[in-house]
Length: 164
Image (cartoon, rainbow, N blue to C red; front, side, top):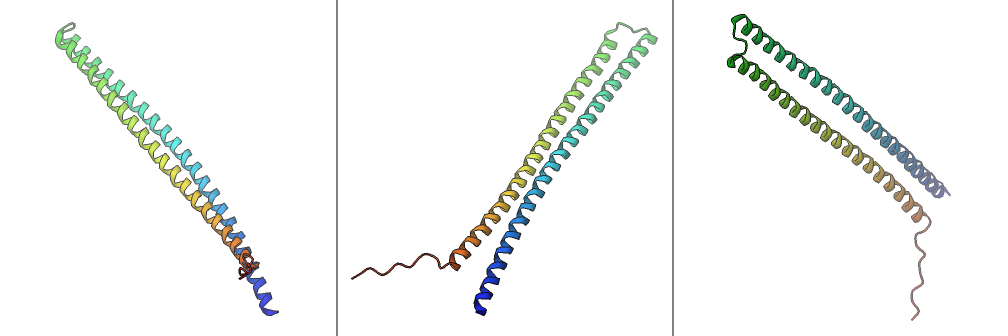
């Protein structure tokens, strides 16, 4: 009778352990999903911050360009060179440099967006991999429990040897 009790205790411990393992794996999946959501919120906040900084930099570039052009026009007016080709060329050059700077800033903003999107894709993929691994462990636990129960019940029925 002692062996039967030990077998029942072992089977119960195995079943409880499997159930607790599955519960823990589900909690791990939920934690991974929360991590993915937090990562997405972080990416959105960083993208918004980068956009605000880019807008500020664009405004600063425009402001500096306008100041430089105004200074040239003021100096030209004081020197009596209003309408000269040199003054027009200088003012035009400042405008051209502004356009170049703004184009560069736009390229950098686009590259930063692509980098952030790639990082977000990586984070999602790693989260999905973690969830899939946890699900695989759950099913492995279920299969192990099923195998143990199957063996405890005697496995497949033994068939009689063929009659001679």
